[in-house]
Amino acid sequence: MEKLQIRIIRPVDNKELADIVRNSLAEFGANRQGTVYYDPTTDHLYELFRADRSIYYVAEINEAIVGGAGIFPSPGLKKDTCELVKMYLRPNARGKGLGRQLIYKCLEFAKANAFSHVYIETMPELKKAMGIYEKFGFYYLDGPLGNTGHFGCDVWMLKDLD
Image (cartoon, rainbow, N blue to C red):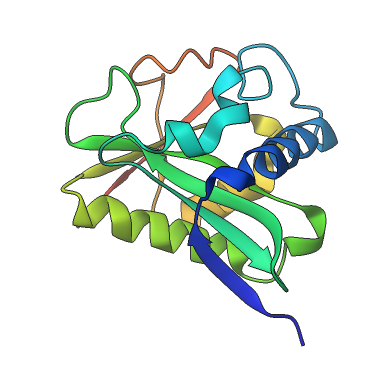
C-alpha cells in the first residue's frame, strides 16, 4: 500500500523539485521562455519560500518526492492577494488526490495568513490542472496581476477566499 504524505520543504529538496517542475513542463510542451522552466528561483525553492507569508509543501509517496505546491506573495500583487505557485506532480503521482490535497493545504495556509485572494498563472497546455482549479472555485481573468515576470503564462485565474 502506498504511503502518501505532504510536508514542508527542506533544503535538500531543491534539486529533486526543480527536476519535477522542469520535467512536467517539458512533458506538456510548456518548457518555454517566460515560465518557471527558465526561472532561476526554480533551483532554489527552499530559499525562495523562506519569505514571510509563504510556504511550499512537498508531496511524497513512500518517502519519495513526487511533487509540490506553494503559496507566495508575488511581486506587485495587492497585500491581500497571494499566488498559488509551482504546482507540479510526477506522472506516477497524478490521479491519487495529491494535487487536491496540496491545493487544499495551500488555500488553508493562505486563509490563515490573512490573504483574501489566491492568484494563479498557468498555460493552456496544463488544461487538466485548470479544470481542478475551477473545481476549487478559481475563475478566469482577462489579464495578469502583479509582476511575476512569467510572460510565457497566458491564462490567469483568481479565487476569493471566504
